[in-house]
Length: 373
Image (cartoon, rainbow, N blue to C red; front, top):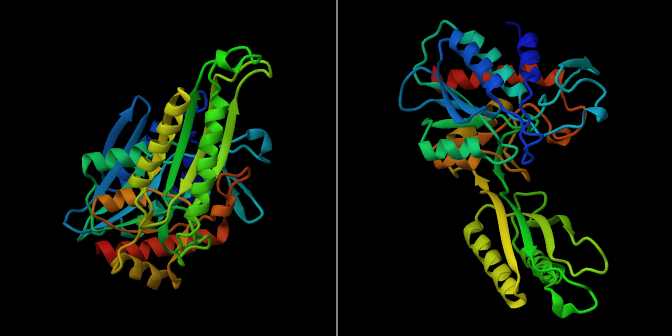
């Protein structure tokens, strides 16, 4: 199968993941497509089932204690097709680029990796090469978490093909996604004693968060463009009428901590304050959270040195989170590096420039040679 046909078939698989069940799709069609293609290239393919229509793929060729993992997530964010100039599920050529949902973030990485493998179709690997494809990176990290729980795959080095403009990334911030619901009790607004106003408690929570944001600005890391942790208040809603005491208020916010910060303690402190405020106002609260740890490559990372040598670029940092800390928990020497540009990810008319494809294929081919042959 030629590169364009392979890329087109990968883009055609709708693998949107979302916290909204009405939008969420499975990734099995894409996992099955990749497994069939890799089996033809002498990979042993294990499908790790996560739910009825979602799975991870661990495809392995070769044996040994070292080896290389080429990893990526199969899911994409949702899209509004009305904002696209072409069908997001049809690979479309224009302006010296390929357009389609996932072209940048990050389905192209699988097509490029498989193309790089063609040079080695008849060669015996001295160390294993593992193609790892995960589910739900964009929504819950359930695929990466399942790998950590299972304790596999095991390899010496790993490359995650997220969009970095072909520059190696050795650090990224974490992300703490928090969804807080305050439940009081409604009543007629003419007498505040008839209810417990959820907005009052939420206002106290907001004051705490704004103070926390100001304090966190004192934490500095020179390796990041935004050199301090950030806290964003993303969504708030509550109440239904001016003459009713608000019985329900919802707030969604995120914190992006720096490497080295104790995010478990940060989470515990946050929950302690919310509990104290809710108790004082005699209201109930519920907090849903998704925590992705910060990532920092090993100080003596051989993988990072190799990627810098092969690309000619020094390592940098990014503000977005990836699956890197989960692969690092499995004992791998991890670098984040891929062909796309983060500025066009999660946007209508997502694309990958033609001039990124051949250099990316060449880079992965050299990386495979260095790590597996």
